Image (cartoon, rainbow, N blue to C red; front, side, top):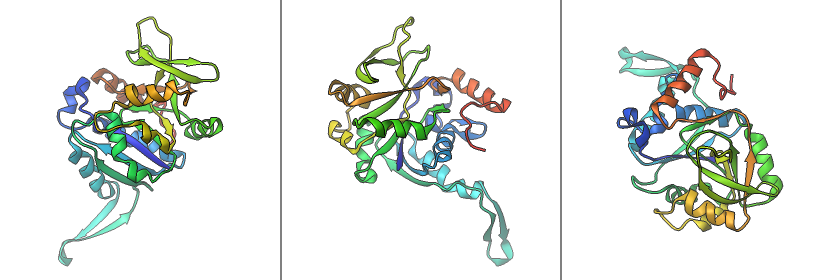
Length: 258
């Protein structure tokens, strides 16, 4: 199953670092947060990634182009014309497809542009700036159990996000803005989508959260996987520093891999 990661935005709220690189490439423990997200998925056996690139896409492509070299011990024999030999390969068992989804394309448009790479199959979908210890296998099991078009992971946080109206058996009926005293759950990413979701994306200017998911919710085809474990986005430098401190302490909750 493919994992689609949205990594094309400008990251304006963390502009101290994103003016040099896309937000998903901002580092925690000397590795991009994108790497941390991918490590989490691959821990559960999901190793086929599609990265929706946009702003400074070349930075993401160059990082992956060099990852094999930077992650392995190598030997250069300059007497043999600079021949390089990989001594031990410690890179990941990943297949990574990097797609230019446009500089100013909205989230729905980015997803629409990778439709041909999904090849008509169920796929995972998440944002390139949030980490969690969510059990991905249980998320997929929940999605398959209800037969709806889409599942989003719903968490409770004291931050400013659009919230989910959830009724009955975890059916999402609406989206709205969050107030300071609101205890409702928000969309944390870590979604599962059936290929029919593409029918609700018109083009580049479609905002996935506002246009697509609201429509799907109104049809009763959107379910919430309620999760009360660890989740944190990296929307500001303060949040990035907090994640860095957790990683440096050896107590990063999202680190599910060895």
